Length: 94
Image 1: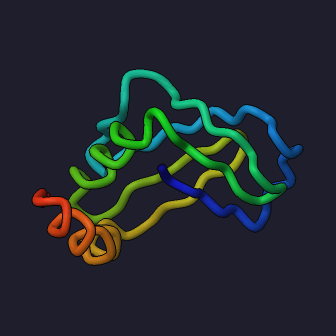
Image 2: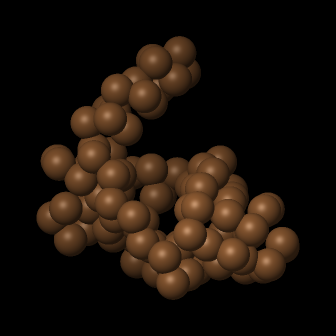
């Protein structure tokens, strides 16, 4: 599960939001994932979160997440640093 907080957003609660993650080399999952707005500024991805995380992990410098009309770019090294302990605890890694 991935939670995306976008302070500029104002999604209606329970609205479906198309989410697409793109790595800095242009790689993306073949079609948008479907997120659900659990708050006006928060979208939750459940089923497709593994695919989105895979694209994020493949990014070298940054990745961009587009959720509905909003897009944010994140530094990839920060993601790897934050997620590595969880992956290690699960017997996995990048």
